[in-house]
Length: 132
Image (cartoon, rainbow, N blue to C red):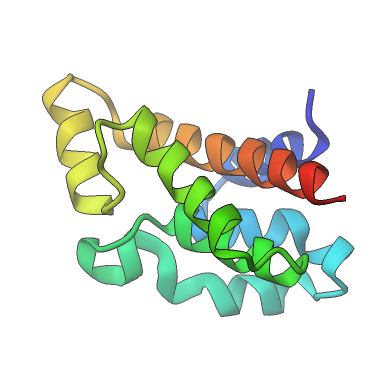
């Protein structure tokens, strides 16, 4: 299994769970980016819950942050990241819309958010590998 996803699973399954989607992803990559995990969580704290107002999903915003930190800033790569996530979710990228659609299908919040995190990590790793 992907080492980044393994770490995300550990963070999301910790009791009590204290990491939102964005914090989880930034913590996962913190060490390889030379960041303290607590600082990474602080930076990402206000991006959870769609910037705390249901806007762009925290997994997506964290993905943008990680890609940028890894030097991947081309509009093509960033748009590809967003497009591929949106494609899997009927074009939706806003937290409130994603959670509403998930609830309408009978899904629980945590597994949905965990899956968004895993999707974002897989794409980050794929786009990073392509950029090498």
